[in-house]
Image (cartoon, rainbow, N blue to C red; front, top):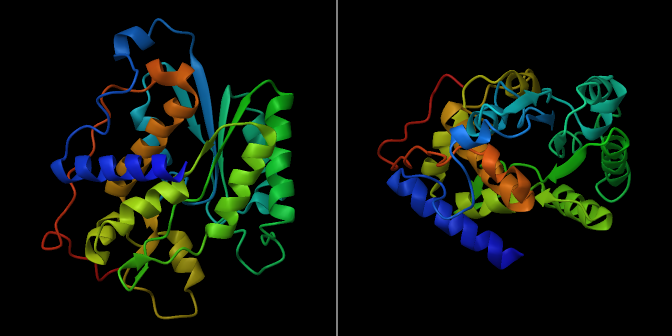
Length: 274
């Protein structure tokens, strides 16, 4: 598994540098062929790193053909617990999606009672709830490990989501369902970059980042959320990985998925307004 992730990450980085398509050797079909298929509804649930404002969701939806009704129900600041407690999960289930991509972890780490879950305890229990509920409506659940934050120390990504990513993999394995290991894959990709290169994906003035730092000086960089460039890159990765773990969806992925070229350090100038 780890070896496969490293191969995907290295191949993806090479394609980023040249600005070419993400994939040229996978199964897939042009838009015209997908139009003849039964329509598919894919629902995305999770936190702000999936949501429309600063997550990979928009890039993922853009990578799918018009045969897919892609609904991004992810919400800023939510954990696996609060997404259910606030009624957001009930709303997402009411969409009666064919597939549900589920990613939590960032806010499950937060200490407040409304959001916190323990990686080895309640977090796994909540993920099991999501899986069971999707199965109950006849849908297909796909777990996604959390997108890596992009802060580096000594030239390597600070891996502060490992416990939740591992718990997600374990719950998927226990239930014999598909998992997209975005945490490992994004970490491998970012570790091949400099900090300055990784900062090309940073969002500017995302509301979650502002809220978390309301009582502190505003950070110059938001290394959690994504700008449009980052949304396209990491959303494309999730789309590519989805058709690997659920190959019946290959014809619903645009061929090829284009990805912007990797900015060189000289081209990457972090915004001072963040």
